[in-house]
Length: 151
Image (cartoon, rainbow, N blue to C red; front, top):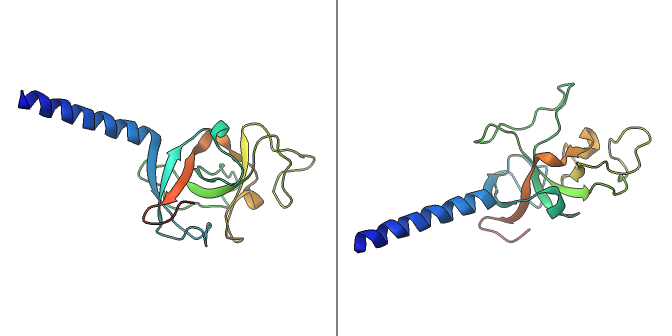
């Protein structure tokens, strides 16, 4: 009877871990693009989200758009081999394009399936240089700095 209880407990624990891994991930900030809010080396708890579950002002983790010119080399890839950026959402699809964003001629509103994101540090490489970020590359919303306050 004790063995069955241990097996059931182990299975429940494994199921809980899998559930949590599907919904949450921990990322380590590499760089100063979100300073002073987040600094190099901060560890952040991120809840996986889709475009319809985020709002203006949310701090998000997402892949940058590809750069055909090769002018921007993001930080080293994460454990999954992908390169991630952490930025704050400045505009959502359908919103007016904020001033100073590399949007192209005649683009007045953020196109469907894209986001305008900015680093809190004015020297951040973000939508000011890169234009729109693809919303389908969104990992999730940063909830809190581990060992620190909520964002």
